[in-house]
Length: 124
Image (tube, rainbow, N blue to C red; front, side, top):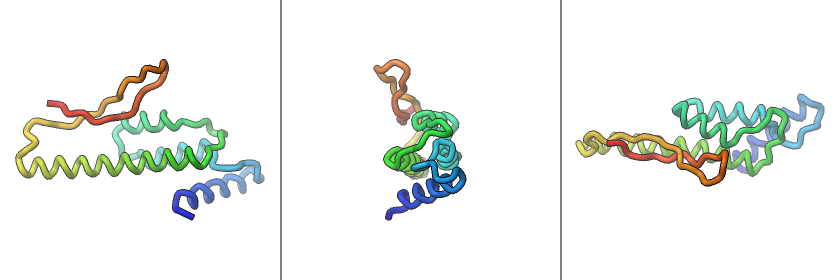
């Protein structure tokens, strides 16, 4: 069993124990709390976008594929930010960044009421 499946099973079993066995998975309240902890070091804009993307009501049961996708997305985003910071540090040390800084934007979506993913762009 991989780490994410073990984490899901542990959270689900703790929930069932607290509610007499009625739940068949992780509930939205626990899921959102976990994502909030994973996103706590992100910028407020990035954290807000990720949390809204995976938003669940407190009593919703979150299926494992959704749990897995959300946790992996948060972990990959953190890895991306660390790599970008390392790149900018290396370029800055070499005197190659000049006045270039990284900014974050949200792509527009053609579907009403939806927003696209967070993406980096360069500001000059």
